Length: 256
Image (cartoon, rainbow, N blue to C red; front, side):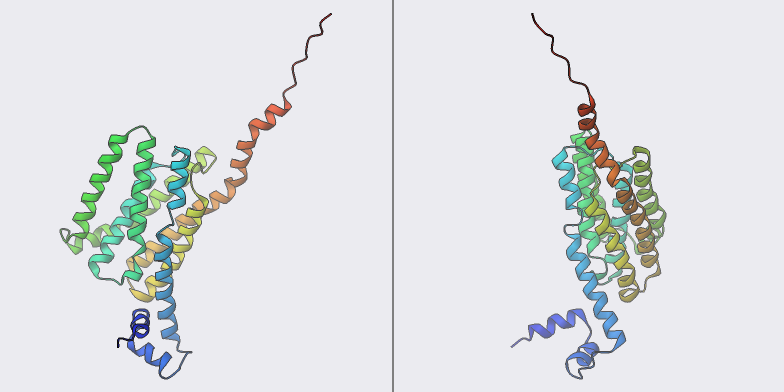
């Protein structure tokens, strides 16, 4: 009979660590603990990434507006995520080290389509979906040489920073974070910070470590803006009601 429990644990750790934990009962091995923690974090990040940008998508759809969201920033972010996904996939890195990018790419593409759609151009939204699908096929379908992906991954850091910080600049100019979802911003920050550790542990790829470090910095800037503009947005919403309350009531004319 197949030992499904052992098979599952061997997905989280190698045979050596399995023997240490379950045969020798050596639970204090540092290398095995770090490997298990990294794998667990990776799977947790992937599970979280399935819904990480859903609050942002639902907020745009509910308000039927993408006000305050920079399409330029979204597209750059999508390009960086897609290149990172293709680079990791072609290199054969463990799915637990990059699987979240697949779900992030899909959700970011949907956000870009919604920005175009609510910007008044449904045709561009459809064209974007078709063009992006073709790009993903070219990158992941074995049509792009690995050395080209390595070069593209090298440009990921400045592209990612430019995309995220352009959103931060738009927030600063608007004096508000607009339709940005606070839940999404903080989940992206937590995920990128955790990915620094999993990249060190599971791949050792310097390019991936630098990419996630840069992503963490950019996500931190936007998360801090969300906190800073939180009260500002609330005050703007309540301002009309306060002004209406201050307006003097029209005096009724007395009739003889």
